[in-house]
Image (cartoon, rainbow, N blue to C red; front, side):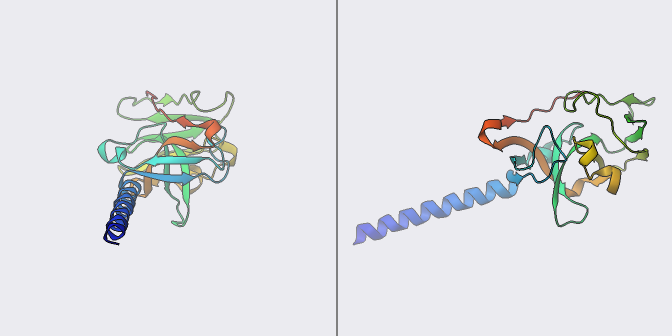
Amino acid sequence: MKEKLLWLKEIGESILISFLIVVLIRTFLFQPFLVKGESMEPNIEGGNYLIVDEITPKIYQYQRGEVVVFKAPNKKDYYIKRIIALPGERIVIKNGQIEIFNKNHPQGFKLDESAYLPQGIRTSGNIDLTLQNDEYFVLGDNRSFSYDSRHWGPLKKENIIGIARLRAWPFSSLAIFRYSFSY
């Protein structure tokens, strides 16, 4: 009888420790995210299950081209979009082109999105906006079907949950997202 109680105690402790580890990892390091909608197609599709990195952004700044998950402007839903412009930058969308102005490029540069957008995709809208020090401009990859910063304005840094790092589902599309865009 004593052995059974000891065995139950050990199992209980193992379950409790495992639970605490999962809660800590999910709360502070990584979080699962189920994609709904088609705003990030063809790169990320509705029904994809992603793992979102919450810790890296606490160590360094978000970068242009990264895909982030954030609280939507309505604060009830979560969205997933790509960072296009960074804090302090001026973004101009005109005639289907995106131009970014910053300290390194005071005359501006046309954003090359060939690494993640199909050829020929143009960005609709007529925007000329300078971001504050805590704001990002985000767009969905499926520009025609994306509710993004063109509609509701800049994204505040405090609303960002983290960076999409891994597509875990479906297994046939398992992928690690690597971001290495230079501007």
